[in-house]
Length: 202
Image 1 (cartoon, helix red, strand yellow):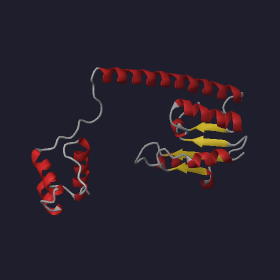
Image 2: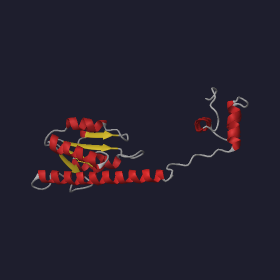
Image 3: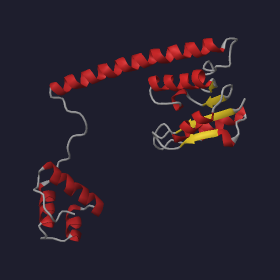
Image 4: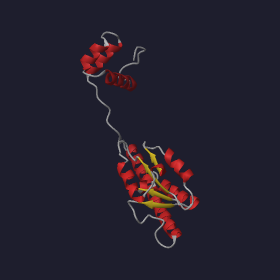
């Protein structure tokens, strides 16, 4: 039996230190720790699935490190425990350890059923939420940030710059903006139709 561990970043800016430190008490070799360090990236997890063999043990800090959403978690849980035949130990949830008890299959089946139940609830909630959003839109409710309002002085400065009546430096001084921000808002103004497009737009 070989021991493996898997960790991944669940949100931007998250540190993997807690997940990695938790593996040390299980005696997992550093070469057997698979890590995905970018949100949404699961390349290492794919390599892990190709490495796992029947009877191996996979250690994970938290259940959501496996995948996003209960349906996906359930699929990967079954793939590892049933198809591959490896055991799973979730550190934050000691009950989710396929090695406990006398009958491994009972633990695997119970966890699978619970995950599937949660997946159905998740789907129902998403469908209800989508229906609520659609109904709100039909009533004229708008979502997202309100559009930025530009002063007439700012619009005048942009118009003069695009007509080459003032230089970029003069436009930046008039609007008190950095060059990147200035160009960003110029494009927004053109896209919104507040000013007609020009070939000299940078």
